[in-house]
Length: 140
Image 1: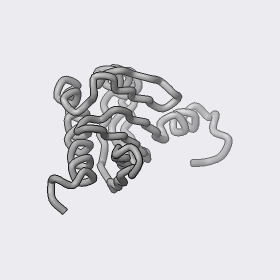
Image 2: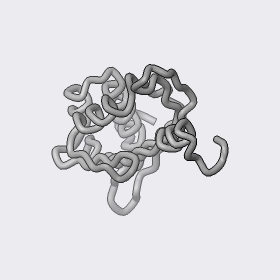
Image 3: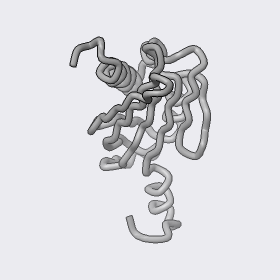
């Protein structure tokens, strides 16, 4: 495979976006996003720029980083879009300073014409917070 391969190129775009997002550098991350990007975070929160998730994370965590795991991608033969899936774990600290690690995440991206046009983000943060508050239905 070469860099001309759309799947390889899309994976590299997502990797660069994730690296910039975790600095955090929303302006640098924005370079990888389409102008009309839709970023949907946990709970269905929609953002139209890289600054949205950065602001959300600043409220939910004292700090947070991703331990990047596996990245898979597939090209849609009809649209030409490349769907990129990245999984791994979040680590950081909650607003009260309590550290955490091993918080699973899944990010799903659609890359079109060299730009990320959509992202869906899921993680275990809400479940962990429910457990910390004594509200989990079952042990984690």
